[in-house]
Length: 231
Image (tube, rainbow, N blue to C red; front, side):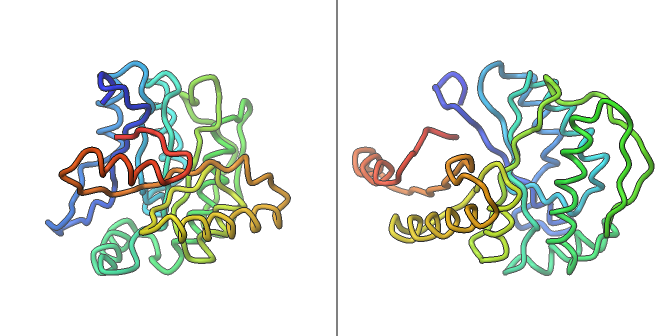
């Protein structure tokens, strides 16, 4: 992907513990391997199911990958599956000692915890609804002590409000240009409600294509606004 000129490469998460269908290798380990084999391309994981993981240890693991990559890591986080994969997803949460019905709240608080730890020079503690710990720091912190960009997924109203309030960007998919534009306008309005400039919220659009004709495929891709080449 890097040699071909792509600007980003993304991998998946969704472990589906004990389930063969759509099982993925551990994304943080795979990101570390990709970081070691590349020099310029941005690397990311989507949807990283953050509520499955302890946010302190997740912050440290992701900061380590960002160091290995020289500051090229970008994240796409999610609350996990709630549709046809829900049975497997609930099994993952049970195995991780995390309540499935708390996944949205845990995601929001985990983002707060990680951002706090990524830039803390002095030890910081946390007293939240789901996570509590005394003052501490993590090492290493991300490259340049930066906040690793966090994109969030989702098209339902609660998920989009979470994007508008907390995210650096929105990772989404859409079956049509018209629906994408409608959702984007809705997201922009929500961002303004939270006092944010919609232009500061990035958009990563996943457009799945299956065309044997390269010319027709490129025409379709180019109908989507702000499209960039991504692996």
